Length: 353
Ligand code: NAD
Image 1: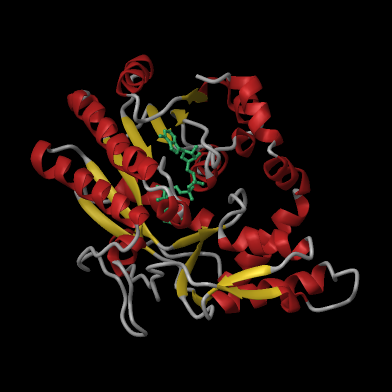
Image 2: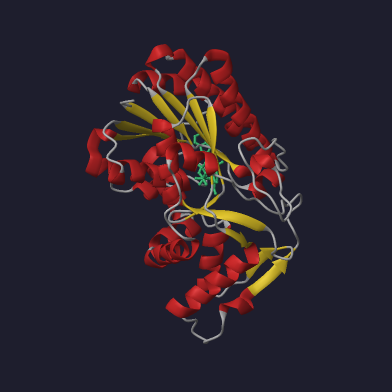
């Protein structure tokens, strides 16, 4: 497979921006990347600073909404798109509980638009990769793992909208023969993650001496994967995965939320001791649990390992240190996000279109 014009949707978000950097800076992707992003509150072009200068026409950016079918049609035609890696989504569970509408629009209707446009490209279209989550499988008890055969049982508007898009993607393969692959991945962490998610939220609050909110008793378990490992898995699946197949991607790093928060406090106390010399664990505050909070997610990625020889490279402890160091080294990035300065910058750069 030789992709010439790869559309990456949601490329200004956390995983999408890491993926674009991975393709251009590490994987020696030789084609052109067309990053399509609406720049919601979660999309930050600063995550990709320097790429246009360094890679010229091999990196293009289009500020566009995947729900806008006419605009997307024009972009597909202009760039002769022959592959899509689809990250764009509303991605925060708490926001989906408060305001589910945009999750239905972007995650379901937006995915449908892209599938139709990919289908219209006929034989010129090579691969549609859909990036999804393990949350579609629902919640586990203390034992067991999600496999690709686990029945879907999403519990939040976010996971239900992702489940819906997964079904559409798979159906386009079965019904129309569209070349697709799917990946369902556990929680990611790493550089450029928007500070509403657990790890950056805790790092930043802890550095500022603010309370560290933990849902319920903190005993909810998640599996964690370093974002670069996820990017490598996606690229491996796009290139070598069987068309029409789903691959689960996991980090083999199950952790209780409270254990992660404590670990972050300990690492920060070691590398950047608090001014008053106190342990940052004193900032931990338990707050009312999230409605419908899934107890445990854990991924069995045997299929991806057996078929495509992928396994995570980064251990959770080294990955977490690497991530914390990135946030410590990039206070300007954090300040601009938190002050809203980057929203003003986006308006100036790209207008209100
Ligand atoms: P993110 O919220 O950081 O980024 C989402 C990006 O999509 C943003 O840049 C946003 O501007 C863009 N976007 C949103 N609506 C859009 C629209 N209508 N049109 C165009 N662009 C739009 O999300 P993320 O954490 O990087 O997640 C990326 C994908 O990976 C999502 O599909 C998510 O479901 C999936 N996923 C995430 C995780 C995780 O731990 N973060 C784990 C498994 C799967």
